[in-house]
Image 1: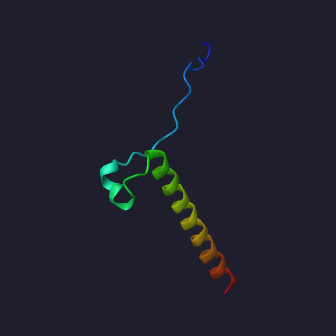
Image 2: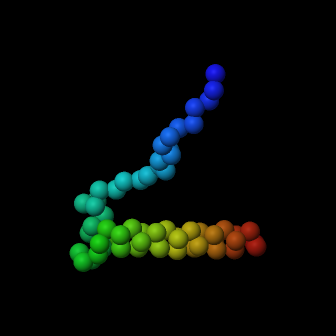
Amino acid sequence: MVARIPSVKPREPQVSIPLSKIERFFPGNLSTEQIIAQIIRMLEARQRSRQKSHDEDRER
């Protein structure tokens, strides 16, 4: 038997958050793309902060 190669690339897992749950945290004039970009920036800042804290703990 020959292995079949799927003709459709598997989809990347996604997270979906209803806008109604997060819109109060953002100005009303932002597009969905701008909200996503801002969320990514906040997560990156959080990650840097956690890494810095972790590095400081290791130095002690």
